[in-house]
Image (cartoon, rainbow, N blue to C red; front, side, top):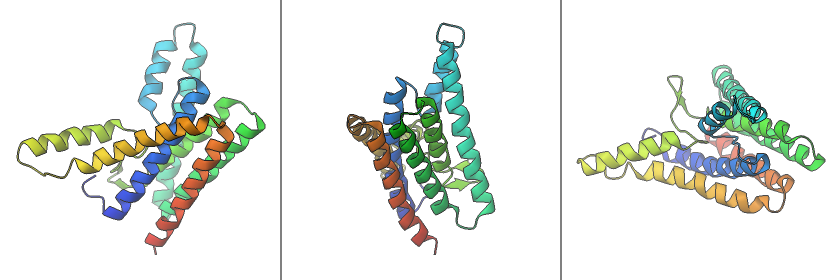
Length: 211
């Protein structure tokens, strides 16, 4: 994360907030599953697979598969396109918008969250280096590890400011989740439309920065 420039960090923080927003909606719509936090879904599937909640385990597995598919598509875009970032975020905006349309039509929740998981997975491919994500946009475990290591550096005479970036990124995701939970009270269609619009707005600075 320390190698990410200020402009990219600003975009990352904004997208992390949107990811938290979307994850909160998915969590509330499914009654406890995630569209961006696959560790939670993996544990949920493992706990439920042999019990009465086998259907929940299958749903969790489906969401994980959709997330991985989104990451794979984002990775292909990074390989094949000269300026993939605006296209990836634009595709994520359209996908979240499609989920909003399904919610408005009253379609099955799992189809919606599958689309959301794919969109969130793709966002994690915006900042790649050596085949790995430099910034964990939609999940916080890696960010919190970075925060802990930065705090260790702080108390052992290292960088005095390295902790700020992961803390801001994590705070944005959490703050977005709080706002998403509030927006969900107005209904999933409206909340997801807001998320899609926010992603669409993020395309503009990414397109400009690539010129």
